[in-house]
Every structure is written in C-alpha cells, then in structure tokens.
Image (cartoon, rainbow, N blue to C red; front, side, top):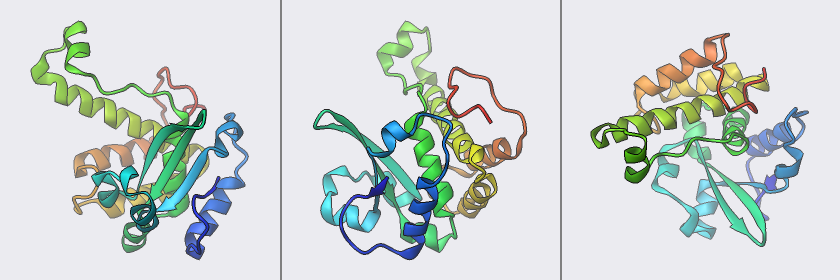
Length: 194
C-alpha cells in the first residue's frame, strides 16, 4: 500500500501507512495491498476530481473502488484535515477502510430487488440504511481485529454532534458494537474472526 502520487505527505499520514503496511494480516490481504492506494482529499481534489464524491468532505475517509488495466483498484481518500481537526486516529481510519475492501458486502437494494423480496417500497430506505450500518459494523470489526478498537472508538466519539458522516444514533450503535465482546455471526467471515 502506498500513497498514490509522488508528493510530500504529512508525517502522521506516512506513519499510519507504515503501521498499516507492517501488520501481519490473517486474511490474504497481501493479494490486494498492492492494489490499495491512499491519497489525501486535497491531493485527490487537485489530481482526480472525477473520483471525489460529496461524502469525502464530510467523512474521515472514503474508499472508491474501480477497475483499471485488468485490476481492481481501491483508492482510500483520507480527509486528513478533518481527521486532524477532530483528533481521529489515521491508522484506525485506514484499517476501517481496508475493512470495507476485504469484506463481502450486501449491496443496497434497488426498487426491483425490493419487490422481488416482498419488501414494501415505503420501507426501502430504512432497509438500505440498515444494510449500510451493517457494512460499517463489519469494517469497524476489521480495525478492532487488528487492535485499533480504542482508537476507532475515540474517532467515532469525536464525530458525535458534528453532523459529519453518519448520524449520532448510528455512531453510538457503532461504538456500542466495538465495545461489545460479542461478535455477530453472519456470512461475512473475513472480519469476524477475532
């Protein structure tokens, strides 16, 4: 895993990248780490504006995945300014984003898929919000598995009452899940073998 462009990056971000690169992962993550790139939001806006979503400005980080030259590329866009402002741990944030990459996720349902599953279309937004929250739980567990639970809890606590990323109720649920010794049993095995 490396920084996407050749430029000077902050010592904090370089240290976080080094820490993440030196973890002895149980998962077969070595296959994909060469396909994970990190870039600061300000560099991404300057160099790759077409890859930036509005969510990047309100989140500590987001991951954009795409296919390029027969490879799956995962671009972790770090909002380092926001992380610094609210004292979010960059290593925990990066591990959480890798958790999104290595997990096999349920995708949000389309109206057609909802109708096939007999889900009332009036309930579709709530169902999709629950799917997204479950996906966050699984990414959080990846950071927890590699001993960055407390740092991630601190980062999530720092987000409360700020109206960035997720709403406060969702943040509190994620914090509660991280503090819980129980692990949900689901079909997402990769992040749930603590």
